[in-house]
Length: 339
Ligand code: PEP
Ligand code: MN
Image 1 (cartoon, helix red, strand yellow):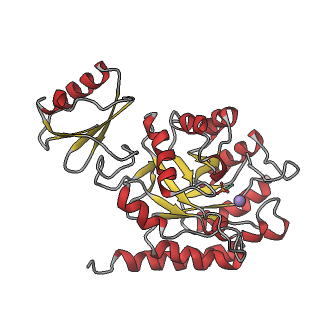
Image 2 (tube, protein in one colour):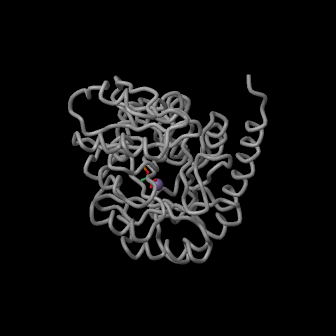
């Protein structure tokens, strides 16, 4: 159920609705919006009697939600969500750029890349300390030592740190050292990790699963939000198809598909989406043109020596060029006549 408050509903009216929801053993999720506040109800395993709420002061209407997702939906929040990360944001007017190496390898490496990322004007630095690798023999990441290097990057360059957690133990560490909690494609339906992410104090970057439908992806976001963490950023990173010319097929149509249903910001990962250096910039341009709120890009100071994903990593120079190009596209779209 979804309760839409009147534009002039008071704090007291809202608190009373929340109290009544809690009294029934359910959980209220209050989403203030530009013109009205809506309150989503979760935890009910059967339909709630809407007449209990319709007559309360300040309530405009109580709506039965028939879709599988509630909190991610535009029904709950018709205005786009802007996810704030300290003094930076994703989903606002500015194109968000998250860039950095696939994996944190050394201080020298992260500092060299972070310097270029900072110089480009990007606000976010990426880098995995816990790497979910296909082979158990491949580089698995530096663990906590890697997170400490990321924290040093934040200190030195003022960049917000985006990094992946793969389980409960790494989640505790990511909470301690990072600014954005990344859930990787392989864990998109790791429901206990999603619930854990929902209890993180940080926004969650939720990558689309390797073969997840948009509905499954949104339901994964719903898991995070149902725990009370409403700061979710969706990330399209390509899905498995029959094609062999790319590592994955970057599903650009997912951006308008999500935007029709959800208020959550969406970013594009053309690095994992293509797997190939020469395709990253063209698909980054396309991602911005299609309306994404941001990009996540793999960059390495020496891609040929990278311990993971060197083939799709941009050089520092290529990255600098990409940022200029995508900013120009973003600017053009922002000023395009609507119609
Ligand atoms: C990553 O971004 O570091 C990563 C492992 O990507 P994905 O989960 O999309 O494969
Ligand atoms: Mn990678």
